[in-house]
Image 1 (tube, one colour):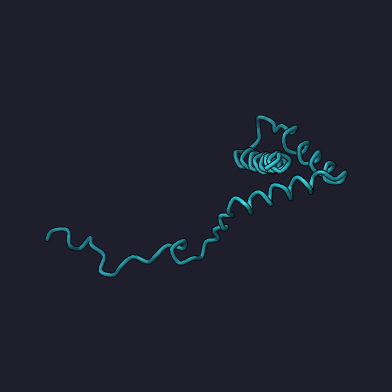
Image 2: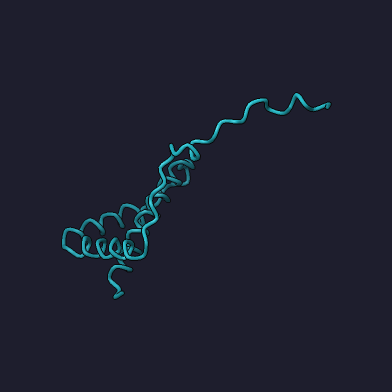
Length: 98
C-alpha cells in the first residue's frame, strides 16, 4: 500500500514502567494505613515532634515569595506545602479512634 513504509517493522520497545524500572510504592491495606496514621500521631505528639511540626508549618505555610519568583520556586514551595499538609492530615487521622 501507499503508507506501508510508515508501519514499524519491529515492535516498539516497552516503557520503563512496563519493564519495572519506575518505583511504585505498595498500596498499603487499611490496617497498614491505620498503623501509619497512628505512628504519625505518636511521633508528633512529643514535645520535640511539636517543635518540628511548628517549624515545618512556619517554613512552608507562613512563607510568601515575591512577585519576581520563578515558576520553579513557586512549584517547589507548593510541593513542600503539600507534604506538610499530608503530614498534618495523617496526624489528624491517627488521633481519631478507629
